[in-house]
Length: 272
Length: 272
Image 1: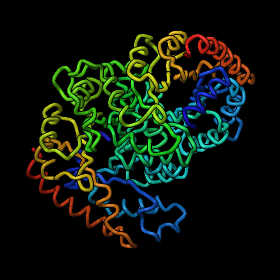
Image 2 (image 1 turned 180 degrees about the horizontal axis):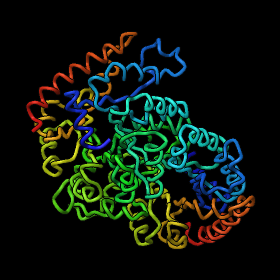
Image 3 (image 1 turned 45 degrees about the vertical axis):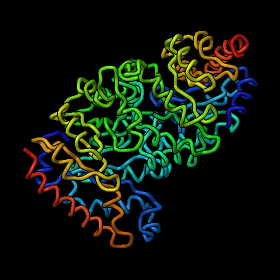
Image 4 (image 1 turned 180 degrees about the vertical axis):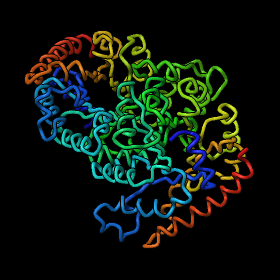
């Protein structure tokens, strides 16, 4: 999916919601455990119930990998089930030397038809470029994450007087364009989002930290939105585990609708 | 496997060779493609033929992931086949926020019984610690890699006048110990290995860059060895693709023996 199609979808749904499919056998409603593939059964209902509000779905691969080969089958089935006009993100945080990163790209872009993969920047240019060689596919590069450990290295000052994540953003802009690269930007600090938006006025940000990880949606929109929206805001646990019984799909829908309603107002206010 | 057992294995085999199982369907001998699981059939013969020289095996997960769920099955079978007294490394370069890294740890340490996983440091402490919570399991943290892109960020100078990889090493030493943490240290520059050895006298290094990626074994041993050897030197393509026909196992053995012979001399010379 290209940037134009993504923005069209955002405008059509009046939403920049990404639903995180962090599906965990220990957290899904008990009645699903009788299903042949409980993970897929759960995801299917979540997707059915949030498709009017979600412009993107983001399975985190760790949840599937922890189940062995069966988990990968659930992930494949989930991806096949998501309608093609919705943006898909493999939250995999991969990255290796060039030819090996190329194999990860093949895994996510060819074996599965994901639109994008999250990539870790530590290994530099040749670990990122192989993902950019695929047409209409995206790299979502880790820049500033929202976890405790983001302080350890991402905020470390370089000799240029910049935090390290800024060096990542500045250098990586030469590798990709706003049409094939996005950045992960944590939502816990509004002023930080404003800082990053100044560095990259046109790129999309994937914002992981609204909901369970904290962060205010209004602040994210106020400081991060651009004329193409420029934001995909993720919510995982707050939506997918909103309900604990047979009605979990409806509960997820209600939470997604709440966020979409808020997002519609924010798009009107800040998307210019 | 703990550090004592690993060093005992190194002494017993007079070798610090790690064989990289970067098994690629397009590169294995053609006759294997008729097998039900060509990847496993290939790995099995490589393991059978190198077990006297190898103290560790390191499948890079990208090669298996690129084949979908079937690839993960081949990886599971491979791991089950490797004798338990040999050290195993999931070269996965994972890393995510705390609870999610915990799922990756579960995938590699519980679903499969790997001794260690390579981990990317960018997300900081909570992305690394969950792996360290498993007894007798290891984190092998990316420090200085041997690829072109290692120049982009790993060598960037911080305000403390240190290259970034040094900050990673210094900080991460407080998270783990020489008994549950190793570092990936690229072999293309001997003086760099000496620099890192000064920072971490007791930790094991996984050295990926001998063979196809360049780097001299003598230099690695001279600058990197300590009294517990402290080195696992990997060779992938140079061993596993040494032969192209039915005799590929024997060809692999010959290459592994060459390296082992060299390693035996280097252990005598520098392991003190």
